[in-house]
Amino acid sequence: MHDVSEVATTTTPRVRSRGDLVGAGIAAALVLAAFVVPRIASEQWRSRLFAGAAPIFGVFLPHVGWGTVPAILIATLVVLQGPTLARRLSWRPLLAASWGAALAWAFALAMVDGWQRGFAGRLTDSNEYLHEVGGVTDIGAMLRDFSGRILDFEPDSWTTHVSGHPPGALLFFVLLDRVGLGGGAWAGTACLLIGTSAVVAVAVALRALGAEDRARAALPFLALAPAAIWIAVSADAMFAGVTAWAIALLAIAVRPTANHLAAVAAGLLFGISLYLSYGLVLMAIPALAVLIAGRTIRPLLPALAGALVVVAAFTIAGFWWLDGYHLVVQRYYQGIASDRTYVYWWWGNLAATVCAVGLATAAALHRALSPRMLRALDPTALLVTAALCAILAADLSGLSKAETERIWLPFDMWLLAATAFLPRSTARGWLAVQGIGTLVLAHSILTNW
Image 1 (tube, helix red, strand yellow):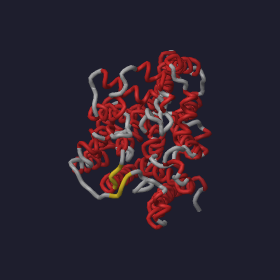
Image 2 (image 1 turned 45 degrees about the vertical axis):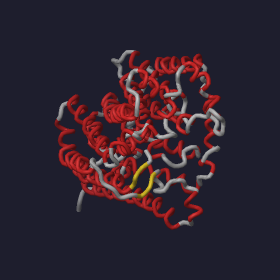
Image 3 (image 1 turned 135 degrees about the vertical axis):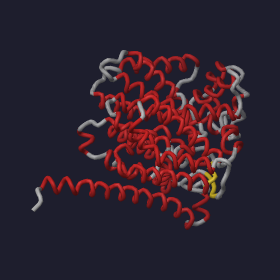
Image 4 (image 1 turned 45 degrees about the horizontal axis):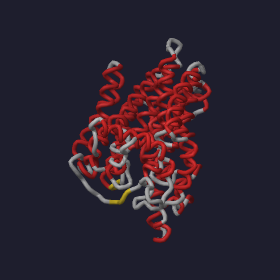
């Protein structure tokens, strides 16, 4: 007869591995249902989704491009060498290699659609930020008048994306233009560089919280994330980078040896993020997770001070955040959002999120959310849980119907950290699942972003 502890030791890994497959299976079924339901529904119902490849915002169009072969090679390299390098490389070279892999992966996926369609022209659409950059001749006047141009059907209404965000998003591209980096290619490059740097920021945060092993395990998955399809290029990728570094700096600030400078810097970035997207107020949830993981509130006051500096600057310049938010809600329902059916999108959004984070993340989620990990205040588990809570809050709000594969990128980067809990023996297999799934999506759907 086996000892009880021996039986538990030998059966638990098998049971948990079965849980990985169950989690991935449920996520795959959700994605399959989200793709199939619109195809079998009536034309009238399908037209109200306003997404030709629902739950992904794009159209079904099998295609290949200049980036196809490089993307396959990069995915193969990360699958074969990523886990080994993540364990063996010293910290700084590992971060550099991971950022380089993430950059190459995202750019190759963009090149599947071609230079203009996939990269340089993405942010020059009539509904995008660059469409308004040329008309901003006075930044002060833009900030003062910003709220007055949010509502639609007015002679000087902002374009869709500009009106749907606080002025910080437009200001970022205006400043790029002012320093001589105007046009779609430079804007795309900036978003790509900042967006992919979130891979490094997540790892830095985990290490600062005492979870370097988790950071190393997650880095290959972060570098090969399906989210790269939308990181190259969208303004939301830039938002993800800014918020990821805000969290990373806050994680650094909770260390006993840290001074208040990191906390103030974190607060400044949190404050900036509030003026990039209204929904990023939900980043307060991962920030709280960092404080819990660090078992301290010491950085809270300096971080709040940093954030208030940004709030004060925009308020003095003439833009009041709450006015903008209330007007954006009105603008939201002036458009197709009022017709998009919540009955589909509340769960279609989650399917789109699975497409962005991959089945490996879904497989690992039950490990990260286990009560044992949360009771132990495991930093990675807390951040994954916080990201999931932020996503669910955004979903329930009804203010995110469709396009969440890019809108929720700032939360997705932390959800991807769940992959750190996958057994080392299965890492390459799950990385292969991530890579293959991403390549299928990139080559079968022509995304709008």
